[in-house]
Amino acid sequence: MDKLIELASTLVSGAFIAVLAAWLTNRSRNHQEQQAEISALRVQADALTVAVAELQGAAAANRLLWEGPAERGRSFLLAVLAFAGGAARARIAGGTDVQSGLVGFGQAAELLSQERRASKQTAAAVQQPLTRVAAAAAPLMRYPDPAVAATTEQLLSAAGDVENTARLEAALEAFGQAVRAATAPRPSWWARRRTARTR
Image 1 (cartoon, rainbow, N blue to C red):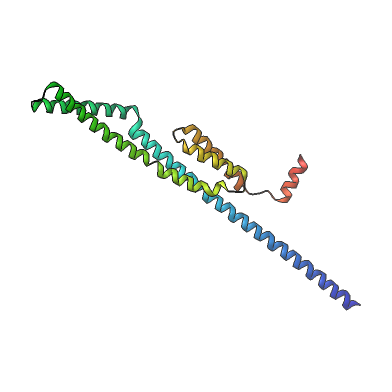
Image 2: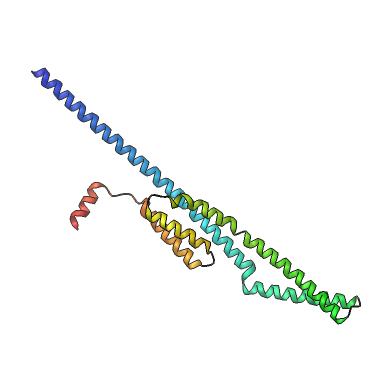
């Protein structure tokens, strides 16, 4: 009988140890998967943030180079100088007033055409960073956390209207808060229970 009790005791303790080991293994695997998912989210969020910053830089450079009042004034002054230079050259070559004016207008139009072409090329440079933003946002829009997915969508929408910097900054801030909440360590069972008791 003692041997039977000892055998039963061994079986029960072995079963308990096996169940405990399986539970600990599953818990450890789940924790590792959760940590890997959080790390992947951080990497993807960083890639999106960098892409948005690059887009903002390209848009700011475009504004600085081509859209400011000083640049428009410079373009106007250069057009006037091209007109005057062309008209003077035509006058020196023996042209009439009308011919001089036409040559001047032609010179000014050629200069403005070159400026416009350069402006469009610079504006097209914003397309590449915008493509990188969309590529970085794609996996985050499918993220299981609804706040991360929704704020990613809002950020992508705001990036499409890069000139509205206030909207883009607000969307970037909301995205950052959603990512911080999703990557924050989850409180332990004891901490959640304690919090539930204090309510």
